[in-house]
Image (cartoon, rainbow, N blue to C red; front, side, top):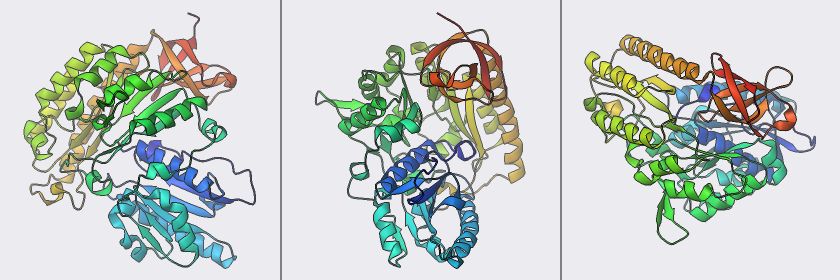
Length: 467
């Protein structure tokens, strides 16, 4: 999944309107799946009488829902725990409770080490066991320091409570929905198979039930999530084996569900049925995040990506033939062990060939326990920094060119939330861009036609039109 720590606010923050209730603050790091997990942890705790708050200072329970993808991820968590430790001491001196938990992928990777290094932590919960969070907190209140990072035998989704319509509605008109977890690809730079486990697909009936409840509560757009979301498979309504394309066709039939998206995909799992869905389904937005990571075949092989640069480009051509207006997003890693100047130039050439509307790019960082960490020929930091600067300059140029190409177009946008100016709302274009337009707050959830009239650093500006 794409690392978006700086872009993601607390997804379950709400004004706590019951002064007698316990309050929980959930700090979310990392990918969209962690955002979804934070929401579901909030649901699990709501059944125990917790309400969410948007500040740690106001909370009786602070949860750090962590990501382990990037370098020094654990260091960031321990730094945050140091600050929370001081807060907990102050609370204890006042005779007040503050419980602290670490969840997510750093919790899975570090386990008991978190308790050893931070005496303030009460519970450590892995991403496959957060449905057990209420029970873990009860044990912690009895004096036990709890670590639960086993891969659960039971299906956690079966044990999570269903929030009521009012709660779902308060979260907005768009929603994430996890359909697949884990990864069997074992890219040599990635910790996901070790922190999230092997690939598991949620059953079709479970997905449809959650999707219908979301739409019934007013959600207009659903983004399907998975570490390798297009590896989802299940038994279809007709008893046959279904893939993600089949699932999208079925979800598109739900009355009131206007838009569908999915992320993150692996090129190896982009099959014909999924490409056909992009061709056929009006609800499936013309935007695809399809990481390639590098443009050199030798580097791709060393990464264990299981595709070549040419295969990736040919795949993009097939997708664009099916949906000509599709916008591409990608992930890139520069400075993988042994990457030469010429191999980095191959990445630049691939970017020039494909042309991306959005992108995420990073310097390679060793992740303990991954095969990449054992490789020799590590690239010097200054070389990685220079390559990243060049790559990001090219990617930013393409992103700005794509935004400029939208000016003058008439498109439909989904109005999602208030903008910075009075009588202004922020909508989302089919290509996932933020669009500013004059509209009333009562129109949130509407899909309206606009003409794009300008671009900003990270958004578009539009005027409403009548079709």
